[in-house]
Length: 365
Image (cartoon, rainbow, N blue to C red; front, side, top):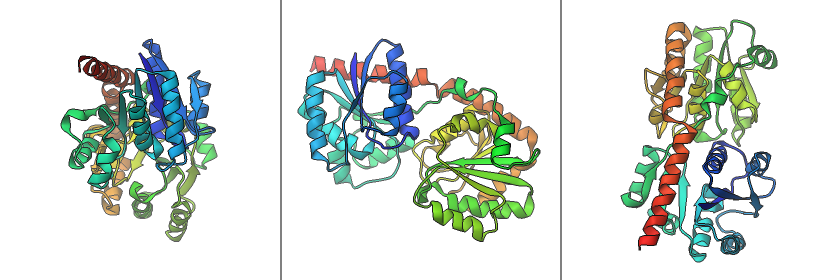
C-alpha cells in the first residue's frame, strides 16, 4: 500500500511524534510511505534522521491556497493509494481538499477535544472517508459537531514503552536541576497555554510547600504564557522550588527520573506525555477531563482530580508524596497498562485495517 502523510505542524510535539511512530511501523509492515511537511519543521528533521522519505511543502495555515494547489499536484504525480492528514494547521482543511481534487481517498486524525462551530466542522471533515479520533472523548466532540458515526474510528495514540523503561540517569538530572538527593521530584510537560492548567499547578505547589517540604517541580514546555507563569511562580515565592525547563528533545530520557508526573490540563485529547510517564513507571496526577480518564486508570495508575481545582491537585500530589507503596503499585500498573493497551504495534495494525477497509469500500462502490 502506498500512503501519503501530511503533517504541517511546526514543532515536534506529541502529534508529529505519533506520525513518525506510525510511518516507521507501516514501513516495517512493507508499506510505502511519503511524508509531506514544511521545510525545517520539527518533524522534517526527525523523519529524515529515521530514513523516512520527505517532500517539503511550505504551509502558512488554513488559508494558504497555493499550498493546496501544490499538494494536489504532488498527489497527482505520486498517485498514492490513500492520503492521511495528521494536523489541524492547514493539513486537514487544505489536505482534504487536495486529496478530493486529486481523486484519492483520504483520512484525517483529530487529536484535540476542543469544540468548533458545526458549520466549520462540516466543511473541515466533508472530504474525508474516515475521521480518526485518538480517544472516545474526541469522538464525542466530533459526533456533537455532526460527524457521522459511520465515518468515525477511534485509534488511540501510542508510546514506545520499551524505550521509556530504560535506566534513567537520575544523578545527572538532579545535578542539572539542582535537586538534592532525597528531595521529591515532580515533573509537568505541556505547552504553556491556558488549557494546560499550569496556573493551578503553581497554586498547588505553593500549598505543597507549606505542607510537604522539600520538593522540586520541573515544568517542561514552551508557550505564550511562559513569562506570566514565571511571574506567578515568583509572586508565590517558588523561585527555589520550580524550574522552567523549556522544550527538551531529550524529555523521553528524563521522565523516568521523576517521582511523580502532574498534568493539570482542563482539556486534552488523550495526553501523550501522560502515556509516556506511565510507560516510564512514573505515577500520574491528572484532571478528569477530555481523554485523560482513558489514559489514566484512577486509583490504579494514577489519580484524577477535578479540573481547575488547585486544592484537589494539592491533595492528590500530597497523597502520593506521602505513600511510597502506592506510588510503587501505580508505577507497575502504569507500565503494564501502556505495554498492553497503548503499543505502537496495536496503533499501526488498527490503521492498516482502516486503510484496507477504505480501499475495499472504494473498490466495491
